[in-house]
Image 1 (cartoon, rainbow, N blue to C red):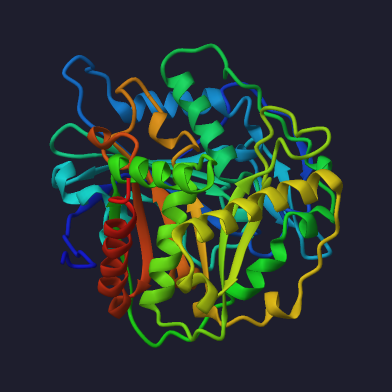
Image 2 (image 1 turned 180 degrees about the horizontal axis):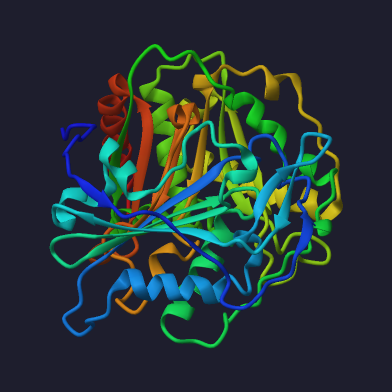
Length: 438
């Protein structure tokens, strides 16, 4: 069993940060955020993303220079990222579009890309790839966008981006990154026009998007070291299980539903949650197309809803994998139907009083476009969000594995050290049980 942690050290020399303003003057205005952008679980949080690129034998350009110039061009279209956040009188945030610019940092590492290890484990040294201002920096001095380009001795490089979560969600971050890459490759403008229009989401949409489920992920007391580890479910396994489900219920399933069901079952067993309790699997769903009318293409604000699959532990563990898959399917359908029907769903006592270990969150990053960001050196070799905070203790990320494992899913998991080995054992047992039924 592989070790659930890594501390390989490498050193990074960082140049003084510089401000990169839009290459032409941008509008000076105040932009309001939506109720979803200003939700406490979103407001003030940072999306930290790392994109890894191999060296190229055909490109002699300096990636830092290329990306810095592209940044000045893309900020013409995404000018809120060149402004500053500020507090309103009611404690919520708004964007002061000052045109000052985004913060840009060049850096040089003393090792080659292999030291990163595919981001399979948490390594405190990864923080050196993301430039961070001091924690006590006043909000009006914080930058909604910070970009760091770190070159490695092998000629490869890492692009680290920190984006204010109030301005964009994961889908919006992917949209921005695609536009930045297009500018780097010499395009005149982004292929998709960014749309602000935050007034399209109303305060009541917080209920419809089921944000109240975050209450059951409240920070627990820390009694054991939380580690990051990973496991890969390959494409053949997923295909076999999908075929089994098709034969059982004559209904097709997505890879996400299959692997989410496996992880939910394995975690519930590994954590030995009492059979009398209920367990939740919360997962983000892009709801842009569920609104009536749909949110316009190019909308990059927060528009992810929170689907909730819930079951009694005894029923979940005594049932089949198919049962778990169907619960996950129904929770996604229910979320989208509630949004279309403008149904007001209220939290129940079960929703808000569950124990923290009985709730697990899941984000699927495979289709946000991070891996397809091409600054001219080809698609990213690896891409991942860097997780922060105590919510890590109950969280899964679904990532694309290496390119030679197309169709598989890498699960990055954040859990107590003592639970990693039991979780992997349970995953292997489930895969052995269901992947061989075809």
